[in-house]
Each structure stands twice: as C-alpha cells, then as structure tokens.
Length: 398
Image 1: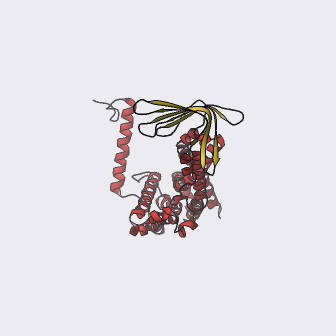
Image 2 (image 1 turned 90 degrees about the horizontal axis):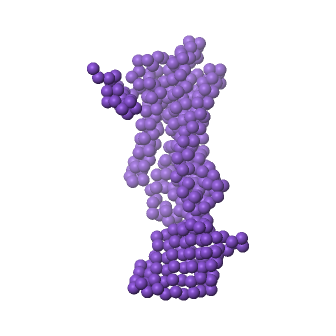
Image 3 (image 1 turned 120 degrees about the vertical axis):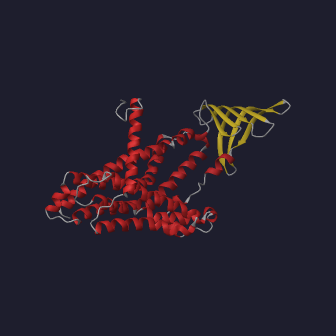
C-alpha cells in the first residue's frame, strides 16, 4: 500500500474507531438502562448485571458498524477535499485508486467484522442472556425473599420476610394469598426455608398459623407446626427460555429442528432471519461505495446545495431504511424475499456507476431544496424557542 493510501487509511480508521466507540457507548447505555429493573427486582449481584450488560454489546455492534463506517469515510474525505489534499494528491500523480483502495479496505473489513459478530458472537450472547434472565426469574430466593419488603409474586399473592438467619433459615414469614375469588388466606410463620426437590419448589413454614376469610366475613384460624406452600408454578416455567430466530446460530437457521415448537408455529420467521443475516453484513461496504461516489473525487463542493457529508448520511439512512422495510416484510409476505438482496445490490451498483463514470452522486435537486427548507425551518424554530421571540428568526420587526 502506497504512502497516500496508508495516510487515508490511518485517518479513516482513527475516525471510524472514535465514531464506533461513542455511538456504541450511547446505544449500549440506553439498552443497559432498560434491563436495570430486571436485576434490581430479582436481587441479582453486580456481577450478574455486568455480565448481562456485556452480552448486549454483540447485538449493538452490527447495527452501529455501518453508520460508523459511513461517518468516518465521509468526514475524512470531506475534510481532505476542503483542505485541497485530494487535489494535491491528484496533481502529484495519485489516481483515484489511491482513494478507493484504503476506503474500501476499511469498509470490507467492517463488513467481515459485522458478519462475524452477527453470525458468530451475537447468537451465543443472546442465548446466554436469555439463560441469565430465566435464571433470575426462576431463582425464588433472589426474586422474593428480601428482608423487610413485600414482594409481589403474581396478582393476589404477596410474600414478606423479616430476616434471614445465619443458618440459612428465614424468620417472620408473612404470605397474603387472595388469588381465589371470595377467599383470602394469610399465612404467618416464625421460621421457614425454601426447599427444592423432584416435586418442585416449596416454602416450608414452621410454627405458624393460617387465617382464612370467606365472603360472609367468617374467619377461621388454623395453627400448624409445619406447612408446605407450593411455589413450583412460579419457578418451573422460567427455567427453559424460549429461543427466537435472532438467538439462533447460522447453522440452526440453515437446518432448523422440525420438532421445535417455535419453528412449527413460525416457520417463515426463521427464513426471514436467515435472509437478514445474509444481507445485513454488506451495508458497511455499500455505505463505503456511497461515500466514495458522493465525495471521493477531487473537486470543490462549494456549489453543492447540501454539504456532501449530509448528502452521504441521508442517502445511507434511506438505503438502510429500505433494507429494514424489506427484511420486515419477508415474514408477512414470503414472496418479497428477493427485495432483501436487491436493496444492497442495487445501491452498490448505482455508486459504482457514478465512480466509474467520474460523476458526483447527489440527491435530486427537488429533494435537496426540500431538505434545505426543512433544516432552515428547524433552525428558525430552535432560535425562536431559545429567545422566546417570534421575530427572532427574521431579525426583528420593523
């Protein structure tokens, strides 16, 4: 690789990493915050929380990598054009390949990384995440037995524990059960413990009483030395998590288990996910071609209606939106599956044609004018909100 190519690759790579880190940090944080309730409500440790947070990363990266790629390439080429670096390189004898080769090297490497993460790390991370969630929900000791707080198990069933004793037993047990219409049951016990066996999970209470209240306000009290309260209905259902198509490996999607209940009920969802896996990884390369077609040639962009960076990002967003729409439609309409492959292929061929003919790729004039009007209206609105004066955007009234 020549000096010019290494220079462009280095600048683009540094900006790509910076864009990727900041974008991943923002998206990852929003995803992690949605899962805090699961950890706090189930009483899981900080280690479990950080493990769940780390498992989110593989699902975030394939979404962010294409946009980090297009931002890095477009910003690098825009700055080099504004600083006349591309013009100088062209005058020094460096052909367009000196720009295309490093840019597409980064874009192709990003596509390969996206494919590896989407089809390698992400399915296993998703499966592990679902196992952790299921374990947290199935772990009754962590879910409900917290000292001094009422815990709602389901509608009409509440449990409160006063203290955990050093020997592992529980003291001051209170259970309120009003799930049966017309009957309220209240359990008190001095001591107890959770026991798991072949019959399921039970809360064994010692030295307590049961207060039973019927519709006619009749109350009966039964004292017991030992009583087993069945909890298996609340733990057994969460032990085997249901795996969705996004949680499956590429091998499973190619050859799904015919006895899988999810596959029997939703066979098309497996096929739709397979088509998505085969196309999503191509978008970093597609966006690299778009950036090259818009900004890759050495010329002045002062006569452009829109900034070339904005043009590149807008086109990339439109292409990605079309890809999402096509992929989502496959599950409802199987016949449209060729559109999933047509979007990246068509929007790769179009910029390749512009690059080959040495023409700048721009948005249609009508689109550009509408976007400029929209941006100006948004700017005027923000200025008015900041100053609180309706005439701020126009510079004041006469």
